[in-house]
Structure formats: structure tokens, C-alpha cells
Image 1: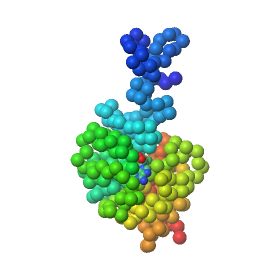
Image 2 (image 1 turned 180 degrees about the vertical axis):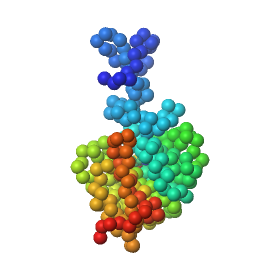
Image 3 (image 1 turned 90 degrees about the vertical axis):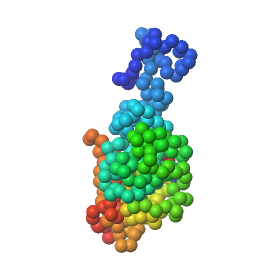
Image 4 (image 1 turned 180 degrees about the horizontal axis):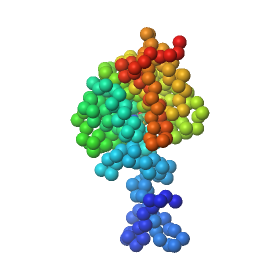
Length: 252
Ligand SMILES: C[S@@+](CC[C@H](N)C(=O)[O-])C[C@H]1O[C@@H](n2cnc3c(N)ncnc32)[C@H](O)[C@@H]1O
């Protein structure tokens, strides 16, 4: 039972119109879970309860599908990524519903937001309008790996899929678990665009492997690794490379 359940009782004038919104309790009072009112499934309810950490302007009409709920970067973390990027043209190679692209655009950077899923780009475009930053973003529906040889940018941002909520079940999340290709392949493709790469990864990622990414370049890239918290919860790890980082790698 969720604490925010809304009692609708006799306000359900035409229950057949939307039977999924109803639930009969022992007392006979009909209730509806607020996330269900918005068409959000039980599977993503816990993300819905944290909706304002994902988008502070959620109530103004933010749209997401189920994968979007799982995978959007919380706003504070996305804002941090934007602050650290240094600006210019930023390519958000796996843009999803726009959590990161919006924050890059809020800092007046030119953003190229790519996603293979047309629905995600539709949601990202809607969400960017809510934040008033749509004019700073070029939205592209496409496969990043096919588009990469034609792209130029000052910074490349990588938030590839972590494989759904089960990422948390691994003690050591190795880079081969990233989707749609392993982390080394993704990084190598990005590196041909620019060495200034920001990569958002699971909190349980194998940090030694992340550090190894700098050595895919000669000379090795600067690297910096940051932990990203939401309150006291460690949500993810961000690896900054090239000009976005401040130190040389320590591995040899
Ligand atoms: C973790 S989500 C990105 C979330 C995003 N940073 C945000 O804050 O909304 C990863 C996205 O990568 C997209 N994707 C998967 N394979 C792709 C590919 N080959 N090219 C471009 N996008 C891809 C998925 O559709 C998904 O929306």
C-alpha cells in the first residue's frame, strides 16, 4: 500500500470508463494509486515516488515510458555533468527522455541528442520544451554507432543502458554488461569524435576497468572519477576523460 493513495470514493462517476484506476478495499471505498492515474505501472512506482528528483518540473507535463523511468539521470546529477562539461557542442549519444540533454542545454550549450528509439526522442523533445531549452537541442533518431563517423563535438556524453534495474544485482558490474555494446567498444567509438568524454556508469561498476579506458588512447587520457549521490544514496559513478578531467591515470 502506498501512502499517497488517493481516495476517490463516489467521485468515480463512470467506473467502466477506466476500470484499471479502481481498487476495492475492505471498507468498500474505491481507491486509486496516483501513479496508476498517470498510466505508470507498479514496476516503476518507486521511481514515480522520486519523480521530482528526476525532473523538478515533473508536474508541468514531463513524459516518459517505462524504460525512461528506469534510466533517466536524476536532475541534480545531470546538472553536475553539465557544469563539468565545459560547454561548446555536446553530443548526448544515448539521450533517452532528455534528462541530461536538458541540463546541457540549460547552460546554453549546443546539444546533439541521439536516441535509437523514436518514442524517447519524442518524450525528450516534449520535456525540453517544458524547460524552455528546445532551441538549443538538435534531436536525432538514430543509432549512435552508425552516426558517430559523421559527428564533431567538443564533448561526448555517454549514458548507455545499464541493462535495466538488475544492474544492481552484480557485485562487480563489468564494462561488458553495458548495452548495446561493451563499454570498451562504446568508448572507442566516442574517442574518435573527441577525447573529452563523460561517462555515467552504475555505482557498482568495476573502477579498475573504467580507469583502463584512459589507456585506449596514446598518450593516455586524463581521468577523474566522481561518485554521484541522491541524498545519501549512491546512484552512480561518473568518469571524466580528456579536458573534462584533472589528473593523469594511475594504472600502468
Ligand atoms: C540510460 S538511457 C539514457 C538516459 C538519459 N541520459 C536521460 O537522462 O534521459 C539509454 C538510452 O540509450 C538508447 N539507446 C540504446 N541503443 C542505442 C544506440 N545504438 N544508439 C542510440 N541510442 C541508443 C536507449 O533507447 C535509451 O533511451
